[in-house]
Amino acid sequence: MSEVTIITFANQKGGVGKTTLCTLFANYLVNRGKRTIVIDCDGQQTIFEKRKADYKKYPDQKEKYKVQAFSIADPENVKNLMKNLRQLNGVVLIDAPGNLAQQGLIPLFVQTDYIVCPYQYETTSINSTVTFLGFILQLKKRVQSMATKIFFIVNKHDKRYGTEREKKLWAETDEQWSKFGIVTPKIEQRVEMQRYNTMGLMDTQKSIVTPAFDCIYDNIFGENGHGKEDK
Image (cartoon, rainbow, N blue to C red; front, side, top):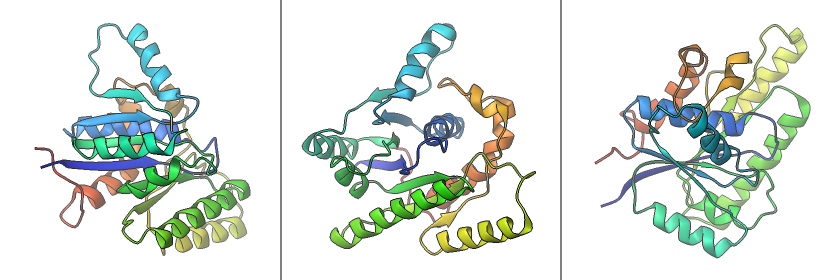
């Protein structure tokens, strides 16, 4: 029997670090002993291209997980992809494009177990996240069987900035998100995050991402989670 957990990193707003976090989470999962594969569905195919570059940059390192590129232009192809992914064991991470007009996103989200939605404490990002959440909620109304759960994760957070009024608004924003999913610990804006690769998690990155990633992992694979254990 298939024992797969599908996790999609998605938001409508670009530049929030979706692709970076997807890659770092893959590195984190293999460190936790999870069989992992990454499907790069973003049009820029950043993870797929980075893996090819990493082969040349780290020729002596063995890859710990596969990275595959996939176009979601054809919804039928996406349906077949998701059906095939359900036959796997372990964890599938998907880096989704931000354009919600792409019809291929519908079968992708419907068949996803969890969505990780990165955002930032700035107006454009928050408004885009509201739009994205509305899209997912409407999709859930249309597809009664859709049981996708959402993690909201503040990324590139600079704790040096923010007036008292802004910090209050940010806290209220997180409180609203918590009504629709789980709000993880924040991930700080640090230069080390820009030095990510597809071969492994740097020690300097671990301290930055571990609180948020542990929250996601424990909620999926912990005693109260619904993630599938590898067979």
